[in-house]
Image (cartoon, rainbow, N blue to C red; front, side, top):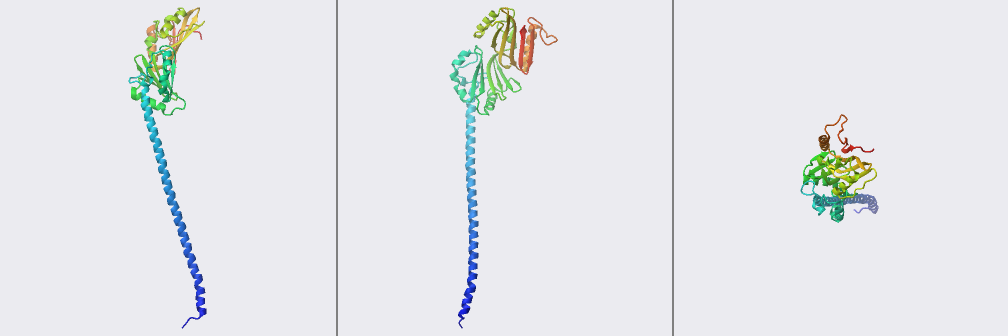
Length: 322
């Protein structure tokens, strides 16, 4: 029995909305699934890119670290050339420059210091006589670890210092000494020095020439010119010069001879010393002038006063105008 046309039409009309609903549902599910897959795919891509970026960053940092380590090793190897095999000696980077040359000789060899400058140091020469000091300090803008590297090289090449005061290390060998100031200043100094026994005594070669007191100032100037190979001028009331430092310390001795009536009336000497050298100077002064008076000074001829504060020594022999 055939279905009536109206029934078929009604069935079709009824199924069409249902089919459309099914189609829309399937389409919505497919679109949602596609969006989810797209998001997941994007996330995987982002993760891969982040991983690649991390790998590149690690490789870059590793390359920089290796370059810095290589440069530090090269600098350390080159820096070892600053120091000789024995404590207080100059290394091969100084060429034929030697402690004991005159200041003029050192200045004529300044081109030999180019390799030291390339390491980041400036080279100063203090004094133009035959016993100048050679001082190394980092150039402005040099690597911050330059001082640490130099400090490490000093201990590696020369061993432990002979003395130490606060931030300063001292090595002493024969007539030479070296001092290293490891604070923010970071200064390495090579120089000759005098032991307390010859720094002050009654000989004409004494760094503090107390034998000149009472004698003509021109005679003192002539002695200094002969010994130091520098011109020494006699002013109306003073003679000014510098000489080597004393004992374990650093820096030169600055000296002023007071002059009155053409004769030396007294001498003022200032320098820097370590604690143990202070005791040695006191012992030398006691040997020369006898025990100290109650005020801590010496009342011999000439009378001597000694003042030491924070490593800075001031000695006055005879009469010195303030």
